[in-house]
Amino acid sequence: MKPPISETGHWNFKAAQVDMVGERFGRLVVLCRAGSDGSGRARWRCRCDCGGEIVTLRQTLREGDAKSCGCLRRENARAIGKRYARRRPPESPALDDLGAAWGRR
Image 1: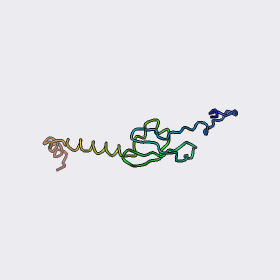
Image 2: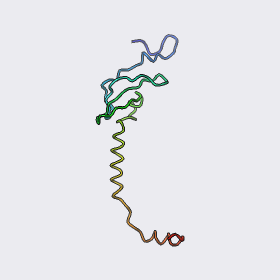
Image 3: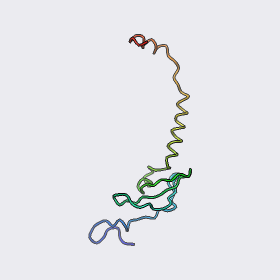
Image 4: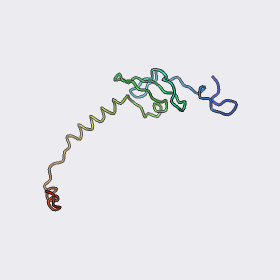
């Protein structure tokens, strides 16, 4: 493998490429490389445990910003919604009095 920095002092991106196929990040498993973005950074196709697929950057996977195809966010939102739906504040006569004092009836 070539050194990451060439003799001219420029960064050699092709030498620094890493094969991430088969690695797991949260619910995602890396399937294959999916080309590069406009800056030359590698993009990777990943399959989620739920069956969904996404294409994301290596940095996003390594830093933990991508843990699923979006299903984890939907599950968490659903759980939070159920939790807060049960916590409705009781009707307060004091609030009605305050509204009446300001002419809102």
